[in-house]
Length: 140
Image 1 (cartoon, one colour):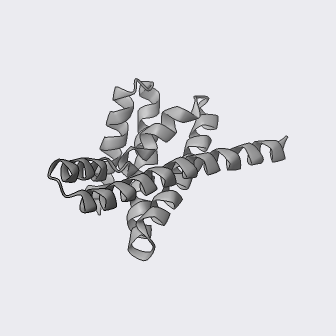
Image 2 (cartoon, rainbow, N blue to C red):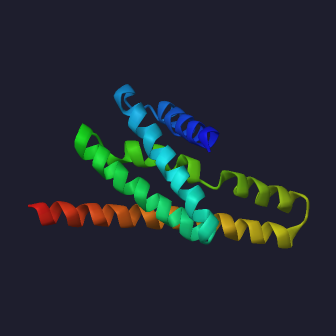
């Protein structure tokens, strides 16, 4: 579990470096990715992978909203870095590999799973944005 914490932190922070995020945001980007990944691992044991991904993404989105307000930066800096550990890149690669190997049934199954996970990430980010807007309006 400790290795998962470290790896997810490094992955998220490293992507933020590639994304040209400000240096002062790298720690928060890494934390968002780490929290999202650990939450995903915990929920994936109990629930379906898509639901675990959705819930972890909502939490990453809420954390990103909090960091954006606290550090006066755009939300996208923290949310993009935070979801990187959750992106199903390996599944998409496997789906393409199965297509190349002419195993179309397996490729479609894996591709649909990658598509569902991508949709869960997008939906989770949208929901967290809506929750953030509702919270800001309520406080005005």
